[in-house]
Structures are given as C-alpha cells and as structure tokens.
Image (cartoon, rainbow, N blue to C red; front, side, top):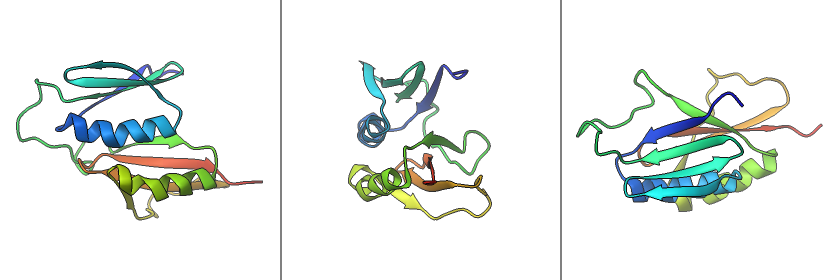
Length: 130
C-alpha cells in the first residue's frame, strides 16, 4: 500500500476519538498508540492519526469545502455493512450526508457519505453483490 498514514488535526480530541475510534474499529483498524494530544489506529501498513496538535492555528476549523482534503473513502465489505454503519453512526457522532450525483460510481458499487461534528467527511464504498 503506497500510503503510510493519514493525519487529521482535530479541535476536540475526545469528540474525534469517539467518532473516529468507533468508525475505524468497525472498519477493522486497531488502536495502537495514544499520547496526550493524539491517537493512532492501524490496518495493516496504513495508519490513521487523529491529533489535537498544540501547533494548530487557533480559531481555524476544518472545512471540506475549502482547498485541502475533502474526504477519505474507505472500502466496506458489502452494502449491508454500509447500512449497519449508517444505522449506528448517529450514536457515535456521525451524520449521514446526501448522495452526491457529482461523484459517479463505477458500476456495481454502493456508497454512503458521513460527516462528523467537526466537518470531516468519509465515504463508504462497497461492491454490489453479483
């Protein structure tokens, strides 16, 4: 896998740990490291780092609508697994976003979009049966 890690700077670590920690665990990531300002989850050779860095510029919050990272897309095993994640997501700080017709899918894929309380978006993509 060519990506070693993704690092997201968040304004509220406990809130991000609640939402991202749940989602990453559901997607097969394992919590492997924690320190005062951050957490790491790993899946094989890929790590996702969530950090409330003291180096962040005060008052500047993430927006997926500004230049920069718009979202992270994750493989999910099946459309049923997407539905299960969507059903549980609100209990973990995620809100479902509407389907976006500007992002056409390859044939035979199911997709859903979630956004956390800090505006970070994830896309869940699964192969359609057959």
